[in-house]
Length: 299
Image (cartoon, rainbow, N blue to C red; front, side):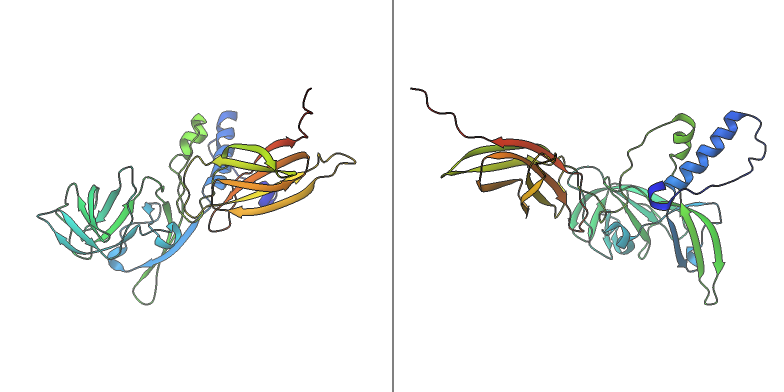
């Protein structure tokens, strides 16, 4: 944050603070707030959607932000088979449980696990809530995406009968982080901005290629990222005085292996970096290898 925004000094009065420990906690709370709660949302609802007051915690299901269909309305239902027809197609994970959150006409929320998906826009629930009706609001909770929670800070009545809501990001783990030094590995809130992980087990095998040589690189990834490609960069030279680093070749591939042909003798460094469909690059992985002349045959 300091690299991006610079150093900003904040002066505050800790009312009722009677010890150095309380003062330290206050400062740490402010720092964690600035670090973790960085997002703000603005939206408008009709009178039927105004079910909270400033200070309440709300959950926002934004299909565009998430990069997936995670919210909408119910168009039809069959109570006997516990089947709901949604207003859009959804994609369920191959592993892990997916939960459907439903808001009834009286504003009461209900959560139930999805048992099966007979069609892209239909789901069978484990338990069918009694209050569900057509056009009720639904939200999908996926194991790969975290819930986006916000704290309402402002409600304004518009001239057309709607209400403008302003809310700031809420991180429920912040108290544990400040008081206990807890560490969390949060899930992303979107599939659009998932930075691909660094490649693993990068190895290079060399072999004769006529009078020159070829090198075949192989690697794998810790998890599958949709639309991922790999940028391979081969250089030579140690980077020291008199032996600068020189680029031999660079290429992009969707496979987890790549072959270099007609390489002369020398020392090489191969760097492989994953890149997703949005151009975001993961951490690079490198390996050094040498191509030396074969030993003379013994007589």
